[in-house]
Image (cartoon, rainbow, N blue to C red; front, side, top):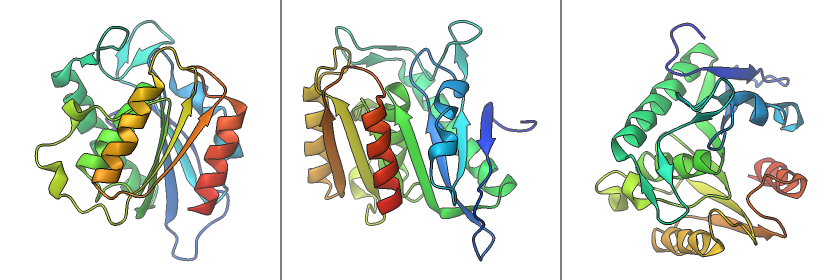
Length: 216
């Protein structure tokens, strides 16, 4: 981890590619979680990928971390300055990882839950040249986090998968539906599924994630 902008766990690719460069899945956990929680599913993901679980830079406790200050219960408030600083750290981390682990920079997937999904979406919309696929679980697009002029970006190589709990009490289904309209307006291909669950990453959701990644 020395020299990296963020802490992480890594599962190397099990199946090597002919060109020596591995596709990568970067995992971004939710608010109050940590890199170990998401990493528990790493060995169930396709073996040709290197899987990297990143830990958020700010701590609530020794085992709970967050990407930036946020308040969703009554509004969509967040600390913009903190969020932008974290986005920059993530972009730096992705570049560092591509160099260190010989990652195929044209085959990068962001897999995020909750706040990690919000960040994954904002990075992909703001910097589509850096990311080819996003899986966002119980998340939404927060326009405040997007770069100015994002509408002019080239999204032809970007695909997005949205998974949402139908009875999500923290991030309402309406916010996910607004995200769909947003993607439609930008002509970004997307997949959208709802599940009979709340604000969790269920086993059914994981199966959908794995299926989508294998297909795309």
